[in-house]
Image (cartoon, rainbow, N blue to C red; front, side, top):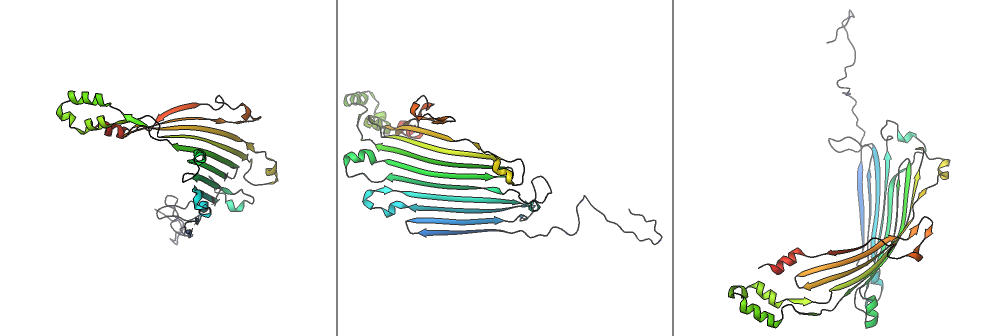
Length: 333
């Protein structure tokens, strides 16, 4: 209740409820957009270019504005280089390229009401990634038998990756080269009857007629044990990466930034693998995989001349791919 001591009886003032203003509401418009272009070059290459933008005051219904503008660019492409090679070579050579970049433009400094646009030299924030990868694989058997032992089933991979992440007080950069060679070879089948003929006669003489006529008995007596592995493979991969991190004392860029030494962490690593695919019985599969990996670069230099299994630790063996479903199918009725 308001009471005036003025004889005229006229009162004036402002009334606030829960500190919320009842007029002149925030009406600044926000906008967001997304555009994408897809390009197809028949069966030789495909490409895609996209751009997405969101204004700082864009908001959904029943949501407040984030006050952080964003812009994202994405470019990707795939080219089948083998389409330009003679078909008789039987080679697959896909090339993949990806580039993404995102930028963030805050209206205010985080956790404050300071306008970011009024701070000249405020560092940009955002991230970017560029990736290039090439895979070369032999698709068809070689005409020469001896050459086929080396090139059939071989896959060579090459790649380059670069990324960066910026904040107003830091910058992280990464650049990496990677390569690998993988060789897989199917092995011819050598098998024999798991249940010899004389033992089958014994089983038939001892087994009840109902069991002898069952599917289980037929699979048991007809099973063949494979002696040779189904597939063998060897592979090696190498990675060389250089990482740099910059830490700044202020949020504004200045001449002193050039004097800041980055924190560098180079790494060179090597991994060797060996795999064996087993198929002892028709419904049962198993896999044996061994690998050795480790770094081959230290802060004081290379030690590749001393490379050995002791350096490439740990060496691990793993038995995998035993299919419980296949095993159940073999033993089930």
